[in-house]
Length: 260
Image (cartoon, rainbow, N blue to C red; front, side, top):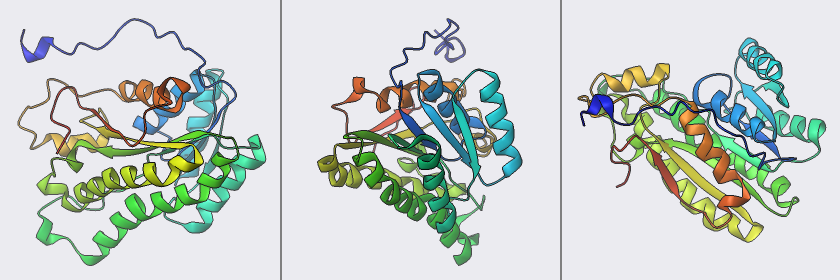
């Protein structure tokens, strides 16, 4: 079987299980691509989902799109790198829904593409602040509210290039490696609060950012993944079906190496 004929996309309609019924989820970076697909799937499986992004027009568009599908969603403009915005995000979830059960940390930036020695200190500071530091402090802010529910789930979206660094997105690759470690540390730190923390090491998914990575990928991927192909595993990890899965970084790569 040739690479072109393997890993065929599923075409059968998915039967949604409502396994997240009555749960409340926050999904960052959720107005397009992987974040939007995850937000949609969580809502299809019964959760009420708060979307957020830096641009208000993108938030409004995504929220209306999912509401038109009959899903329980709302949205807020939020730059996760801004402390006040993170606080407003959490406050809105509590105001609208009264609780938080699930947090999906998907927001990220990549300010540079090119040889690593052409990067600046400001670029390094930006990518680490948004991708790693802000992720930690949002989790720190949300965790006490999840604890009040007795249990909950946090997912950190990383990348296969956290395992196999990409030379033309060096700082970004290194932040994704850091997120793999952050997932493991937080899984141990929050398990006493009955909060599970897992990660998704995403491969080449059909988004605008993957166009950058594909330039030097040497045709290792038989095809790009679709955002919705990341969403089902996210929903599963947030459900009781995954109640004994904690501290894992699950590769969604279509078979490309996603481990150290």
